[in-house]
Length: 308
Image (cartoon, rainbow, N blue to C red; front, top):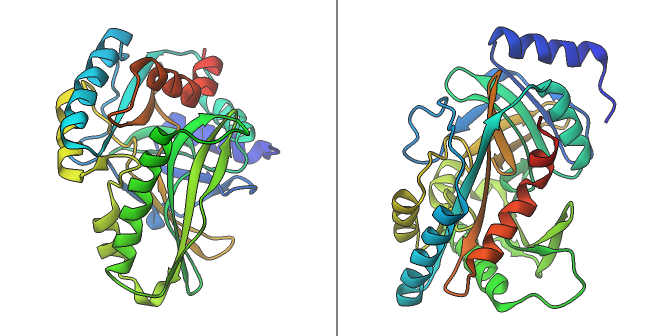
């Protein structure tokens, strides 16, 4: 992805000086700096001080035990819970260059690198929007269900996981307006993996955005369903703080007058010496711990393999 030396040097200066900034690329677009006054960052519920960088990786025994415990719960009550893990360590990277390489590897995602004193420094290449306002249209999506690229049919575990998210979003829209559209089930590619995708559009004038955000976030794609039980599972079974992972990034895209709200996924928090990569997946009563671990490995592969 071509980026001018001036812009790269400016990002490096801002990052090293501890000055707040927010840079982004829309799918297929070029790197831009946003007006920080337009940016709103919402951490995961309960993370009131998200700048603290988590330093401990989730071990396989920790993860396996948590998933096995959760599967037994879900066999009793049904539903889904999204469990995440952390991959942490020390680095000696040019983080701006790493971000630019990361962005080039995933050109069809919503890519960000930013720093604020409240959140610390992050980079990400998220495939998921909570919403987009473009003129008089509101766009949102259900993105859940993951597998390696394949031409075969999807398994029931992933189809069930996706239905929960899509139905949840449809209910939230229908609560505000009958004038919305739900697409047929499709897929979205992310590197060597793919996700199930259902898209929704609605008349933006019929939607109260704050009410919609309250209804949707955390969606079953990042939290689970039923929401209260899923958030309780996360609070008790995840040993780490999510901070801004699976939180919200809202900003104005100056080049096309859109208002976007990105779900912060496929992301990493970092400082001058340390990093913490986050990766998660939806757990149902059909989940296998080893398969779920492999999914988080696939989702975090690029960052794990390129950070030094």
